[in-house]
Length: 221
Image (cartoon, rainbow, N blue to C red; front, top):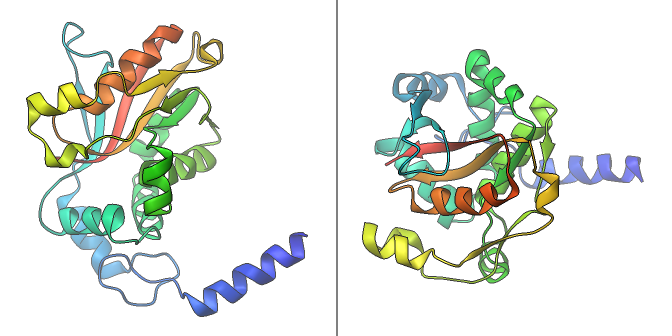
C-alpha cells in the first residue's frame, strides 16, 4: 500500500510538476528564490491583540496585507482551482522560524469550515489545507470534528460589514465540545476583512470553555 502511494505520487509529479505559486516556473519547493524575496519584502508576520469586549478571540496573527501580488495569489488559491498554492504559503511560512515556533504554544488547530456544498464545488477547503499543513509541521493536533458549518450562505466577500455580521449568524455549530475544554486553540482562516467570520467561529468555540483562542490568517484586508 505504501509503495503504491509513492508510485502514485511520482506519477502525479510527472503529470503535474511542482511550480512556484507566484511566477509559475518549475520549483520543487513551490516557491523560487526570486519570488521568495518579493514575498519577504511584503511580509508582516504581525500579531494584534483584540479587545475582549468586542472579540471572542484574543490575538490575530497574519502574514501579509491583502494587496498587490498577495491579493492575486489568494484569489487564485481560493477561487481559481489552484489548491497547490497552500504549499507555496507553507514553504514561505516555515522560513520564519520565530513566527512558526509560536504555533507550538497551542494544543489544537482548527480551520474555519465551509459548507459541504461549497467544498464540493471548489474541491477543497483553502483554510483546511493550510491548517493541516501547519499542524503536521508543528506536531500539533488538527481538529476537524468540533466546529461545523451547517448552512451554505452568500460568500462574505460579496457583502459589506453589517451584512457580513447578519449573514454569518447561526451558521456554525459546536460538536464534541468536551474535546476543546481547557485547550489553547489556533483558528485558521485565509483572509481577514472585518473579522465577522472568525469572531463568530470563536464565539461558538468559546462554548467549549477553552483556555485561549487565537486567529491566524494568511492576509489581512
